[in-house]
View (cartoon, rainbow, N blue to C red):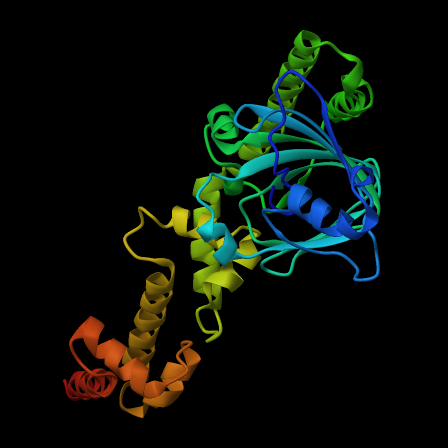
Length: 338
């Protein structure tokens, strides 16, 4: 699982399976732990540390899988390239930290620090870098398709890599449930454990529905976020360093979410920015007339290269910036004569 761990051996739905570094000799523990717990991410352990780890897991990743991970400190990362190379649809994880800290940084450099007792959602389909201290984490892996069905949209439409959930009204109940599955699941019969797991999945989905339902009511996600994107582009068009990444960071969303927002728009993100700049440049040239400095207008409107500006201007308006300025000057002179 991206960012935290993804067990390499699927657990039987009816039993709580245990994998522990104590089951192998010390020289083999590092390879054993990395292979079983962190196969989906790039993970780094301190070179002089013999890892200690224990996984307790049950259920099916395609319908809901419980995992408890007790682990030595580890650093993880997941790049956009690695995500593109993965064929399977990434999961959504609901995690409760029983012990330890988890520091996460998304692709835009935004950091989130999580501590003992925190409950949060982790989107396993977004790039990130993370660092776990010595920890004991209980979480539920949910298939993204199931979460989409419940929310009628993708969680990435509302959230980044990490979404804190501790303040939600149902959070104490889910935290207690995840803790009890980890502590007492091994004592249950196959039938009872399956029922408990199903209840835990339903409780998690209900919490997400309540949380993101409130977010939708407060943010009206797609429409409002699209409107905010256009407002940002208009407000910052004069800055030559505006990029998709800077827009995504300003809106607290991913590049993928931005591209989805603009899928049905007449122009792409960068084409929209170019259009705003060109229209402003034409207005500035018309207002300045013969006194217009074409290069100065280009720089003022966010273009870093006047020659490129000239080519783009001609492509859009069928004339050059200089010709627009001269035509306006001539028009102004004729008006004065009249």
